[in-house]
Every structure is written in C-alpha cells, then in structure tokens.
Image (cartoon, rainbow, N blue to C red; front, top):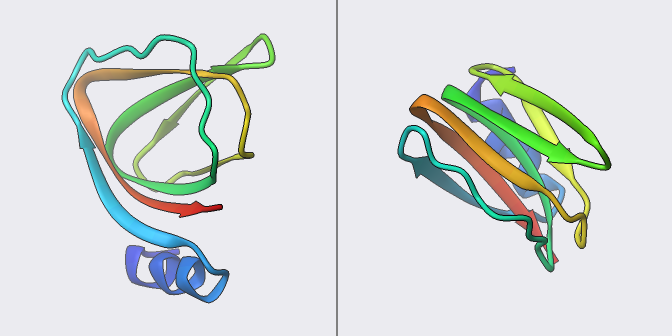
Length: 88
C-alpha cells in the first residue's frame, strides 16, 4: 500500500492524519496515549516495546497500537518519518 492509499484508508476509518518526523537516536520513556494509532513508516525505523516484546518497523511497514497501551519508542540512527493516524 502506498502513502496515498494508506492516508485515504485512515481518513475513511475516522483517523486524524499527520506526518511525524523524529530525529535519530531518540528514545522515549514508557508512556501511553489517550488515542489509538495506526501508522505507516515512510523512512527510517522505529522500535516499539510493549507487553514485554520489541519489534522494529521499517519503511513500508504499518503498526497499530490501542489507546492506553504503555510502550517505549526507539528511533534508529536516521530517525523516522511516519504517516500517523490518531483516533480517540
């Protein structure tokens, strides 16, 4: 799925859409969001850790996370750009 198709699917499903750029070698503390997330990584990579598991997502891959899920985010040396949908 390309970015245009992904964005159309987000909007169709009621998500607010934005492009998020995060610098390289950035790591978050454990946190959660009050909204669900569905995102397409456009460039770089992000490793999400939650429920005792870590998974790295690279350009072209989609990840989803339910509202309230406590997690950490770790970005690779080149950072990451993602097309992000948020839904309350």
